[in-house]
Image (cartoon, rainbow, N blue to C red; front, side, top):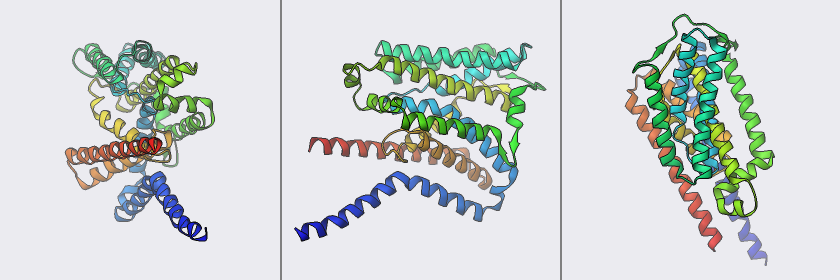
Length: 332
């Protein structure tokens, strides 16, 4: 008996260490990377660079928040970036027409709500495959954006407004939009981890049929998740309209790889194998640091895209391996 006890301890410690590395390895890597970059490249901490990077992180994190929960439920939404692009065109068109930023923002949010509702109804209530469905709806959204601008962007030269003012607010070098995004993520974490919503969310990914048989509103939950994804994308689109001072119908392409990488790479942080808000924020920061460092080093865009693609592969492989291990463990 004493031998059995003696040999069990090292296994438990090894398991604990492995679990710590799996859960927090990316966070530790990010912290080390930031430290090394700050020491090796003093310009990285230049106030203007920090402010620009944090503003970009805030907008991207808002865009990917809804996508995080859709993926956590075992679905996918690849229309999020086209929703953001269409929102910039709708918002810019309304503002350029002299109706002001309040009307433009309302129209932008309505755009995301409509696209999210369509996705949610098609996936949740008719059972269509989410990948093909959101490819189709995203393509339609992208085309409508081009139609609104007659094949071009919609400039807003000299257009002010409360959204511009909000983006310009900062505490020291920290933009207020970044603080607001952090507050949203804290609230999202509470909803995900402390409320029954989070249990329903991950139950959908594990066994949607069991959720339905248990009498839980699976279809309604999926509808709300897709609407939330659309609203997050459109909110980011409104901020991008002010940040770029224009509507950009082709904007979505630059966020597609970033969004999937942030959510899937983030799924190996904290809640290993599951998309979660802390993981997404961590991955967004990692990608922002990569872009900033790459710009300072003069990297071509394709080099950054290769690194992002590799990060996405790491996330996919890790999730697949973890899920296969879990299935193997349950069958034994």
